Image (cartoon, rainbow, N blue to C red; front, top):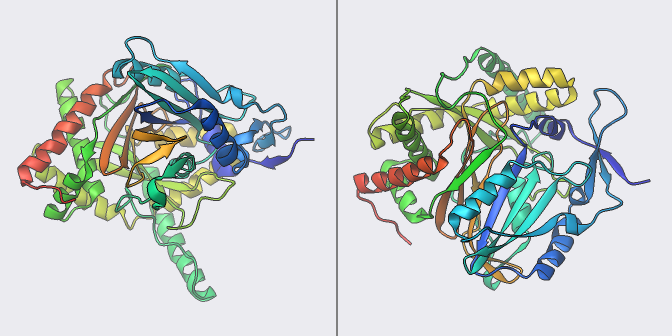
Length: 441
């Protein structure tokens, strides 16, 4: 009989969140000047994904016990040909054609009954190619899956991969190490803060009505920015005492300001979900993978006009959240609803989902060029899924000294995500120009 393991509560929660209008897939795109060799790529996937990480060869099987979590079960009929699929872009094979293909695949569910992931080897992107990965959120969170995908790549000259200076939000202090009495005291303190935070989350009002909320469709759109020099973002941060992420989120906030005004719906504030990694720094992702993150609710000051004023206010709000118990509390909520009946989970998910209008996340990537199946990766992007009937996802990724923004959006909510992308590029440029800073290599 195939080997089975029970799905964890947190992973069950993400598995159950999937709806036709919000597929719980993390989508990643790697671009190349030359298409990687398919046979070599297949060997890498077999050796570094399927063999190392059990979930990449397991399918999801419902439990026969009512309300119980499903199982991960070895797929006896596992065939890599179902998970590595070669496709060709429609003519003329330009960026617009690639955007259409990404959007189509983002809107298409993974096949039930097979391990919930798929890679598409894309030909016909000019003289180059791309690899698009679709990975179900129940396998792992974005930080873990980014490391998993990067495990397929090789480093130039054996150099170690390096991440960005800072993550979107640091995880709150963990009650690990030290004496038993100190760990118990830390747990009591977190418990007391957590109860207060839980109460504040429950009474937090719904996010303000805007065009960013509404009925969702099945169709999604995808867009991404041109790479922006990370050194210039760092220079803005040095000049203002802000972090890299403060600067990037300020540019996103400014982009939403422009977008809302253009569509005739200026609002003072838009609240966003911000995922927070809860794994200890420097600890490798376990082979069993899984989800280990919490969420904070960040009110974006989209009503402020001046870029510098917007940056100062966003930094202040971010600083307040950095010591928040919200990540631990939302992590506990996800674990609880993963063990609860489906209707209870849906009620809690909808309750939390109404409190924000967008999901925004940042994943640090390699600091230098990496290679996949011998081909240098010229660009990396990913798109975060949206739960709780949220229709807008914004993803930021750094790679080889550049920063790229990706926008994934429901067709009914943001039919033109490229407008947000263009506004983001303009806002970053405005911050650099206003502060008259230059990047330092």
